[in-house]
Each structure stands twice: as C-alpha cells, then as structure tokens.
Image (cartoon, rainbow, N blue to C red; front, side, top):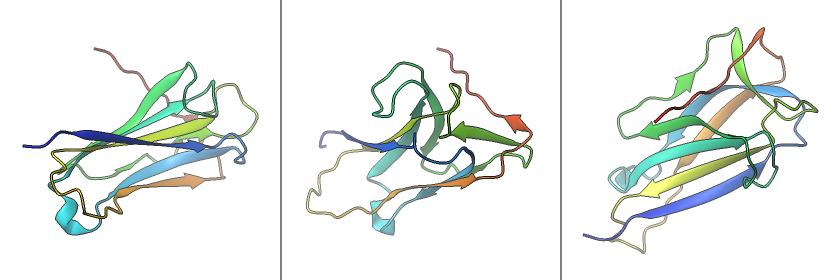
Length: 129
C-alpha cells in the first residue's frame, strides 16, 4: 500500500465583491479516481489573503459518499468585500489515499457557488475536538 498525499490550493478572495457562499459541490473526475480521492477540506481565513493567517475555519469537508451542501436561502458564508468578518482566502486541501498509480491525471475538485445578493443571515462555523 502506498502513502497518502495532501494537495493544498489557496484562493485569494479578498478582492471579490462582498458575496455569500451558498453551496459546495464535490467533483470527482475522472470517475476512476473515486478510490484515490479520500476527502476534501475547505478552510477559510478572515485574517489573511494567502491562507496562512490566523482566524482559520473549516467551512466544509467532503468524504466519499457524502453529497454536496446547499445552505438555506436565508443564509450564506461572507467572502470578499471590506468587512473584518469576511473570509479573505480559501484553502482547498485534497487528500489522496494510497496514490500508487502516480501516472494518473486527476481533475477532481470542488465547485463553490456564491451569490452577490447577501442573505439575511450570515453563517458561521464552530469546530470542537
């Protein structure tokens, strides 16, 4: 059995017009990558646009068999804009389980849906443990 690999990708969203994230959708492509893609973790920061600041929050996670997530119409996660509570960067970490077949090309990732129409309620995240 091979080793596991984490592949992080950072997105600076500080210059995005204030918006609400309203949904997340996992994408596993090509389909034969399903056994290799173990999980995604999406971490956002209110303090840094380079994904290395304080104030990080796990805002969504996915594992095999779990569907995407859509928030209720009245709520969203604030990104961009000039607001100290707004997320300024989003880190997507992909965990590959036993990548023995190193010559495979993977196009897996996530689709993040956002709306420029801000919802009445702002979602927040709380993690323990």
